[in-house]
Image 1 (cartoon, rainbow, N blue to C red):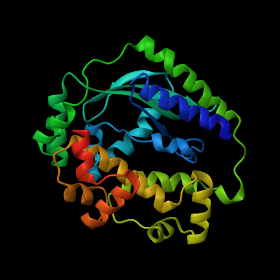
Image 2: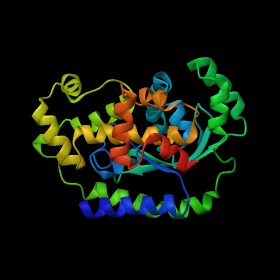
Image 3: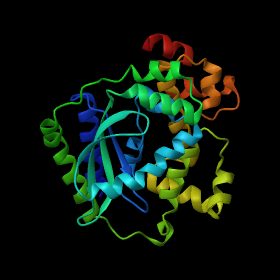
Length: 280
């Protein structure tokens, strides 16, 4: 099982680096291959526009809510669509042999009518139009050729399906989808003041149970995973937004900008200011 997961991870990284494709993997409810493995790091849109939009909790909640509808539409096959924020992308269904258990998103391109989407987002969620326009301007306008995408995504779909078909039955410690649900919760609420104790209360599990199971299934402690998610968002905001370091720190869940800077340097290797300067 670990071998196929490693192959999938390497192939996704190849598509990102060599083919310059933006790819994200989106598991459905009670899905267990992506959510409980190293593949969970791909469960996020990394482009600057999506990262910025998701700093608004209500907009992020909308993104999460839309997943169920997208999975439902995937039953008909792959398609090209535009999200509520004006991002156009290809969607491919992930199957476990018979049913659709999630989807792959390929490409993050701005819709030709993106101004109307920006107007709606600004009005609905109180986002400043200027910053929305600056962020979405980073996206390309022309989607890559569908025939080419079909060709390079086909092996990924097959590898994922093989991973589901060869998946062992969950043991007693992982039954109930606890890790799956915790990861979804963190990806949705990472900007809030969440702790392991908070997670224990939300999911009615003991600290030792969650710590052991989370580490076993993801290879990381809960704290390490939370920091990874927060810093991934911070890196994108540093490179693609005009927010100050302090504003970014608070927007990704740090209550102290000095602590944020120290943590960023420890895990990334440079200070937020130096990272931004090098990236620009």
